[in-house]
Length: 356
Ligand code: MRU
Picture (spheres, rainbow, N blue to C red):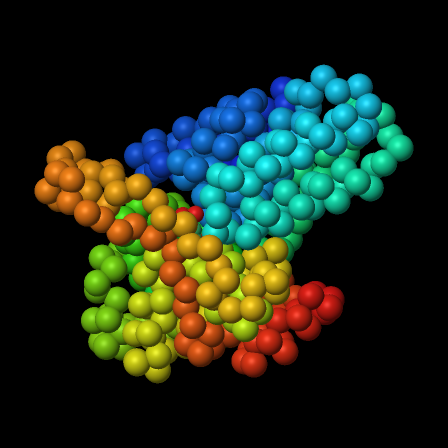
């Protein structure tokens, strides 16, 4: 399943130089610039500023950030190193609140640290590097599996609408919601993809449309308010989206605007599927009410991406970065271990027990 976009690798470690290499997603589609980060503060900034974005990619970047931050510690004992590690972890955890993959990856690094008890500091640092590399490598396999499961839901020639970017650059490789599209393309499915531009940060226009076009997929860019007309015109047979956190009852937080798309899909009787690695499912959140929704600066609505301000100076704005799609609007949640259907309270825990 290789195409020019999947060859990119948006988050990786330069092993020789212990440098995190990130594709700066804020510069796409105009420039393809790879950042070289050595400091945990730079990793924090890159996450906050969405230079690296997409729940799985954020988790991977944070894992590498923990390694880079802890590596700088001058502590001489396991215990002292753990004190420094906890500070690094806490710092990176404050970068963005909604994507649970961030916390999942940080906790996994913590568990690995604790499993190394008795080792010297150099050995623990090497273990952290290994764990971060493992998190990245596993995500590739996870996305591949999601693609395989999700493709069973789709038929050749279908029109598929997606929101935001859940593609290869939002993950280690392949993407989540875009993984079945790439796989289908290899198998001659000839999908027609409709990409919502995804205001205010335009991940759909800048990233999804770019990714799919580069990969040779038939993609049409829509303004967010055009989803209804393409559905009404019969051009969309399924909606596929990614997610930042799925609660135990199936309520799903994803990029702002997703819940509106789900409501439209229900109205037009179009299946609405969420593609979710298990690392994005948070069974500790009972419902979407428990999910912390990030609020972002007003400039993203009024000036960012524009040559001139597109709103009166000092106008009040409200800029929630995510919304929660009610579980009743979701036809299925596709994980690497299979597809969960309602009632999600029963089916999601089973996904954690199943083998691929
Ligand atoms: O604010 P972003 O761009 O990080 O939001 C990303 C999304 O909402 C994606 O759909 C989600 O993280 C899934 S990425 C596989």
